[in-house]
Image 1 (cartoon, protein in one colour):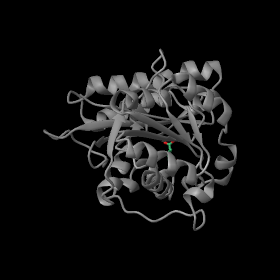
Image 2 (tube, protein in one colour):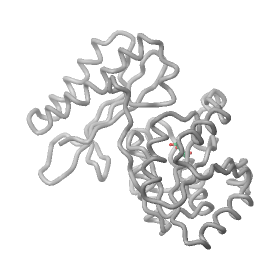
Image 3 (cartoon, protein in one colour):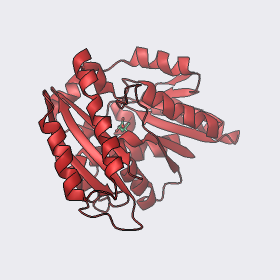
Image 4 (cartoon, helix red, strand yellow):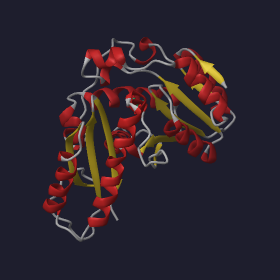
Length: 282
Ligand code: PAF
């Protein structure tokens, strides 16, 4: 696996491989890698000649300096995991000036209202930061296909909108959420849970499964009430939000219209750890 430590190294590598006509698959990360990330590279390996990863803790998508400071930085371990997976040909480890030559700040985007829902409302400016770094990474890596986890479904929808608006020629592929045997969605944050909390957090996925069972059988307000009650009775957990949203607009719905697709989104604090999950309803 090649390690590319600057924009110049990356660009030379990409040009060399493009000249050979290789199809490039790419998945950017902020490191602290787990099996969920590896599943992106596994998907990419099947569909591309060359698989590129990047690790960059992007300052502009944090709306809290403390969060940025505390974000786990485990590059050596991450490189080992990528190499061991056997799915990745090269990893790009840019410095801030490689991605932000004019200073570390976000561009401003409007993503058709997708950015104002859910995580956008809870984390102002977050999606401007994600858009800025992903747009720049796409311009440098020039992938044919790019892979993002469905666990961050809103991010995936926004990146699809970004490439559409900016006419960036890359196909965006959503990869289903990788789960532990218990159903808990894999996340770098799970490491911060105690054994007991990790066990208790399985209620998040179980609740989404229940919601799927109630889909088009129980009314949306009644489902909202039932979910609220579940978390009111969970000690050590606080639900930040639950909503059923239209899968295309991400707007909350209070009714299941025919011919629309819906997804349930759930955010819960387990102790001080904020966990997010979602599920397509069918
Ligand atoms: O999902 C992430 O890890 C980040 O938001 C991303 C897409 C790598 C951009 O920094």
